[in-house]
Amino acid sequence: MAHNWNTSSRKSRLPADWEKRRKQVIERDVVCQICFVRVATVADHIVPMTDNHDLDALQGACDPCHRVKTAKEAAAARAAQPRPTARRGDEPHPGLL
Image 1 (cartoon, rainbow, N blue to C red):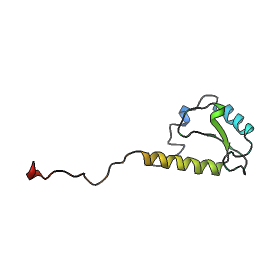
Image 2 (cartoon, rainbow, N blue to C red):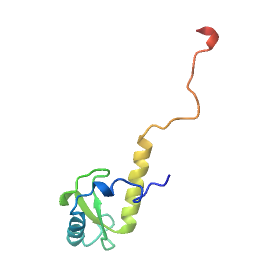
Image 3 (cartoon, rainbow, N blue to C red):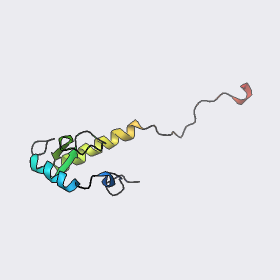
Image 4 (cartoon, rainbow, N blue to C red):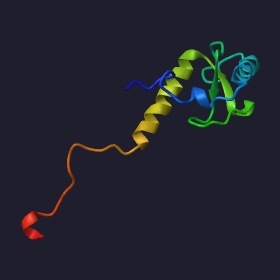
């Protein structure tokens, strides 16, 4: 299953005034705070995977930097979760029980 904005529950957890906050962050951080080259177009959570929507917890970012940062954070979150394996673990021989 694809993990993206359309399948995420993140949008439902944003505050009612998110658009106002997003605009404030982009006006404050005109330049991307990750690459310091492109114009900021996205309000990015500095600490990943949090629901802290305070202005000091957000930074302006350009779309390419935001996509790369989000992909890295998602990969790290997936890697941190244990996944079942196809191989069964070692078991004692039934004749030795």
